[in-house]
Image 1 (cartoon, helix red, strand yellow):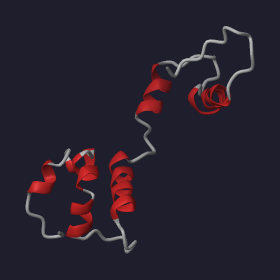
Image 2 (tube, helix red, strand yellow; image 1 turned 60 degrees about the horizontal axis):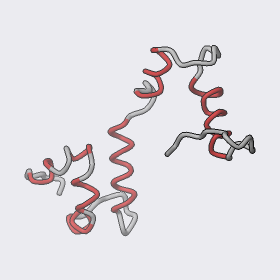
Image 3 (tube, one colour; image 1 turned 90 degrees about the vertical axis):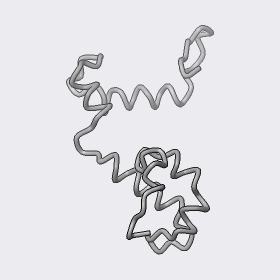
Image 4 (cartoon, one colour; image 1 turned 120 degrees about the vertical axis):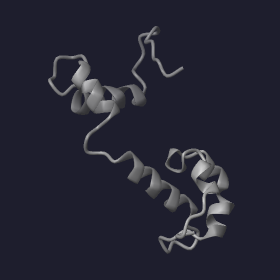
Length: 102
């Protein structure tokens, strides 16, 4: 469903234009018009991006109701579905262990 086939010869949708720009500006690093193994690796596992930190920040942002940058037990329980679906909590398994910080 995310593919675009320009069968009618009309203009490309904005999202296709954006994807082309993303490809040429950020993905195709050697500008050869295709992605090689190194470019795909950089795209999927960028070295300058900390996935765990990003997920932790996401969980705090979405669950910290009073915006004090600290999660209470109540805030976690009120958003339990987000935590059990998160890789950062090992899909909820880590929430069943005793933690001093909670």
